[in-house]
Length: 405
Image 1 (cartoon, rainbow, N blue to C red):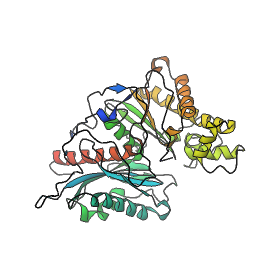
Image 2: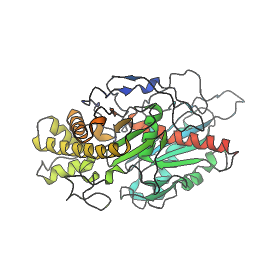
Image 3: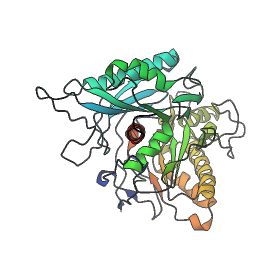
Image 4: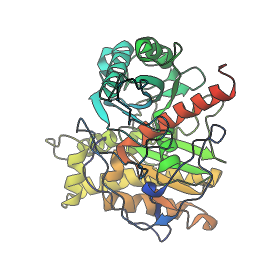
């Protein structure tokens, strides 16, 4: 549920400290996909995420005073060359957000617009191109687009920039050539004729952002779990994103879990985590079990849970426990350094967080008892930052390969 306004306040174990993202100074080496140096950690409470309901947010910025390569700071003096920028996009089922992101992770102002999902793939790509144009047009000088990174809902063939499969959140989305469609739509804005466009799954982009500039900065392995409209996961192993042979590595939402046996998942099957753990599932289950029929959405269910509605509290706890059990299974198999949890439900407060952590700790083997569990640090901009990181890597690869791709 994007844009949750509550500040996350999880009840964590002593190992639940998170890295201070603002202190990180990530490197942009073309051969290293993730920062190698470890960052310091702190016990600060997680910061409030920028709201996606606002057209312009106030994203986290680098402390560098100079304008780094690819920065949104442009030289608008007479005779200066037109600035070039890299833009990151978070393309979700309900909203699309975009911003410039420099090679060191410096983030420009974020623009967010509704995703016209019902209009089909062409309407969605038109909206993405439109918000990218707005981002670039807001810069001083006649800025040109150097590269574009997109974190998109669905299973993505990263090599081609094509959607392999998706739920009905975006009707007609499977088979969509996101990279090619945006390359054509933004050709007049591109610095070069063949605009570099990097496309990956939105949760993978979220993970890339958190590993680069957020709660997992410095980790060589991490599991990122995003719980909102759906439930997604992304895995980083030995500093590299795990894609899988069929592009579905990390699809945590479709893991079978206890308690969901009779609940239908958006993928059409029953018994999956997303059918009980996702935000919309919490609302549906509350109503199905006899909750107040006037309850409009999941946010209301969480608010009722906080004010003593026992049914609402039970539904929220069940959802969080299901997520915790699923995470326990994954970490037992992969043994990551850290687990990072984000998404709209991560803003649901102590009831949700405590239930998730209790279920996780109860299921894992003793050696994983102190596995760090951290709230995501970058909030609604994580996928924007991570998608742009992929675009920067694509540029570096092209340079290394002598321009061949």
